[in-house]
Length: 539
Image (cartoon, rainbow, N blue to C red; front, side, top):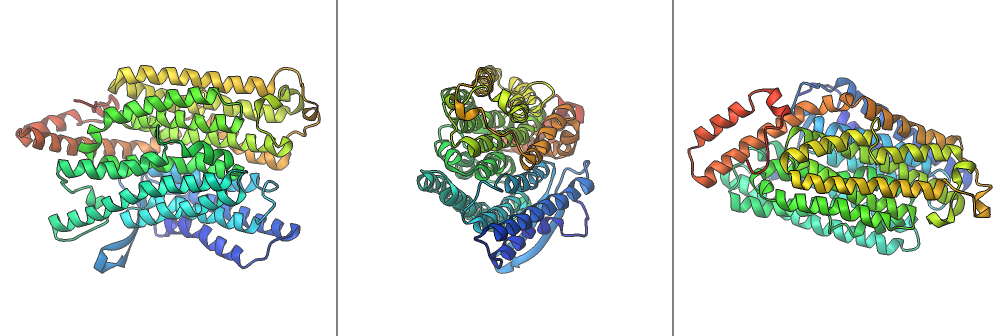
């Protein structure tokens, strides 16, 4: 545990909320007042990012457990506590959140012209909810932040979205809220079960990890949690809300949705479903692997068929997040670390693509690829940034996408080679549709007169894209900087998962526990064994 005296996590959670409340008391509605509000929101989000850098500075790479922990009793009679902390699994997702929010404020500088004040309040409020969900170690606190995220995202789509914004916002809300109801029931049952078995009910996630939950109960609870997270990812075929939400959301909403909110689902599997219910989650591996691969191929094929650039990028998210799920459920060091890395890479690359599509939409008010062509001659700076985002998305060596995808493939081939083969075919299709989009939009003659006079990116837009472009190559060339901080936590996760799975397997088979655990201890005795991927589904 990191004994950092300053409550940095609480600061990161509530600082954006305080700034949002401040904005409520300021007037907006005209050019100068809205400009001031944008500057305040930008400064607040940049300060939030700078504060989050302290996490990197003081994070102990060798510690597998939770760091920067804050524990405050909330309602003792109900065993409710404000309990937050991070480890190597959640660290980079928190950093990704604080990194993208100021970029979303920048990209909306001229895009959002109506109700600017409330848009900025929604963005800051959403940042509070996202960080709160990522650092919560109490199930009720997590659930509160998980549900609160829906409100500002619903407003971003429903108020500042496109023509079908109400339909898309309601569809997004209904899908995610419906899944959350099952998770709430499971959380309440876990409290009841902990009270029944230990005499003290708890929502403390670290204490709940220690419970010996009967197998038949695990299956139902795991299904309830997993359904909620599967909708959020979203896993095929629960993905139908995502293209509508992406297409109708304003640029900032699409960026936040792709870069952060979708990762809440994959993070939920890794933090809750898998460690709380190891035996049950193991039984779901064939189903998850099948749906992940189906999503990879289906998302790629449908993306290839899209005439709308934003829809193409939206369906590409279905494909890329299938890769993440495949890696996580490989349950070896390469697969899980590759899955986490792919979460980060997908956030960076897809966030960049949505930003660039938004920039071109501001100029031409169309996203149809047939309306463009030859833009590389007219907008060379835009073309360069789009090429960088495209290369990262198709996993060219030297970019961030390559590291995550190659690690996931290694992990997948070790765990289930057949699914790895199918996953590769989906990744090849990803190269096809992304380069096809780039060729149609950037190359060839300028056939539409309106495109001849399009202005290239301005200073604000370049300032928005440069940090992302740099990150694409830093993550691709120096992956050790990122992997090293998650290494201990992922190894610890695997160790605990394996131990509990072996225990349940021994219980189910009615074989002597000691002999099975002795074999397990030998298998995980060294880091070298872990790096070889000691756990293989079905072992």
